[in-house]
Amino acid sequence: MTRKAWGYSTDQASTTHPIECRVENTEVCETIFDGISYSKGAAVLKQLQFILGDTVFSNALKNYFTKHAESNTVFNDLVTELDEESKRQKVDFDIWAWADRWIKTAGLNELAPGVEVDTSGNITKFVITQTPALEAHPTLRDHKINM
Image 1 (cartoon, rainbow, N blue to C red):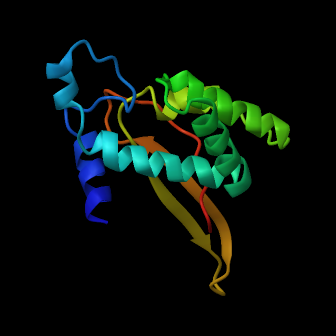
Image 2: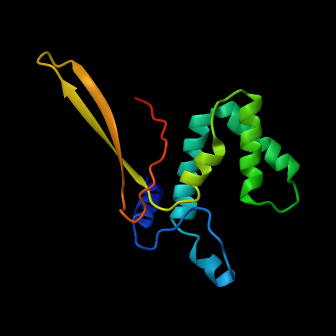
Image 3: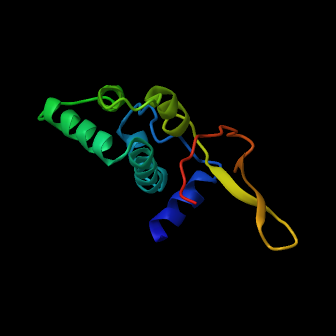
């Protein structure tokens, strides 16, 4: 939980940045390994695994590491493997759109439950409202959650 809080606080600061960003030189490189790269990056991968399922996610990673062993890659190489494995497993999911919202944009979302109950205490309505945490970064993202 400590690392997750680190990611949340870093991603709500004015210095927030996307997980994927252009690095012009080594000086810039040294400044971007922070709560967003590590903590948010890990949380985003966990969310993606939850969305795609263990089989698709694991197979895609295996294919990616096998295909690119001992070589350099770019972000699109990983997304391509995730996309191809999703299609092989017939998972209807646009990984490219997901990557644009989750990996290439800064900021985070707040999810808030809204519950209405009747006089007997039965839930009559349950809605989750999503808002951006920062006005400067208004991207809303698809979430998969357990209830």
